[in-house]
Length: 235
Image (cartoon, rainbow, N blue to C red; front, side):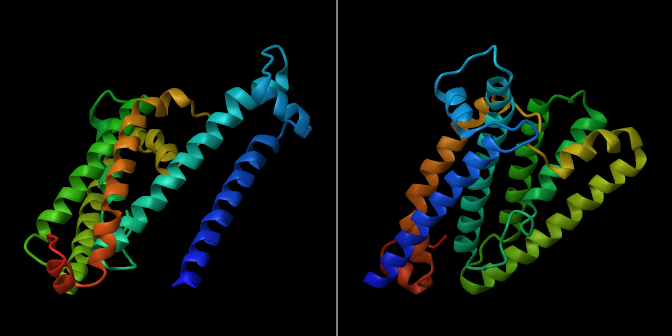
């Protein structure tokens, strides 16, 4: 047990170190070259008249921060999905969440006057929630290993549904296809923190909810009988 705890702790330490190193490198390296001393002064003694400082603060720092936040969120979501469904294949792509988000973004661009990044983020979040709700409804009333398999099958079905609907809309409206293509490809280039700020309460709420679920989620891995014996609700 001590060996497992040590390995887990070292993994967390190593992962954190790699994250910090990648974050610093993303701020330091780029088309505009600068020494580390310039990077330090740009962060802690900002001078708005210096081009290098402006590049770091207005371009690289928001990009790196958004990438780290999104990456961390995807990692937590994937780990939680795989634990709750007891299936290593579970992911936002497998469970239809990505497809639901994509479909609502396509609808927002093609049928609604929603072209700003904030509107598209709201549409994607709504679509992800709708897709997740559909998967839950399709798997209602099941438990154990059967539920794990049905969750994946329901996710594949929901993914196929939303992908086909999205492709149909994009084929009909080529202008919308060109507008939404960059969004579907995914990029943090040119993004500003003002886009993420309204979502921070959601991130915080989700983080608190995930931390509260950790012990219960780990208990689910013991099996339905063990969970019921511990006094927890399997459903």
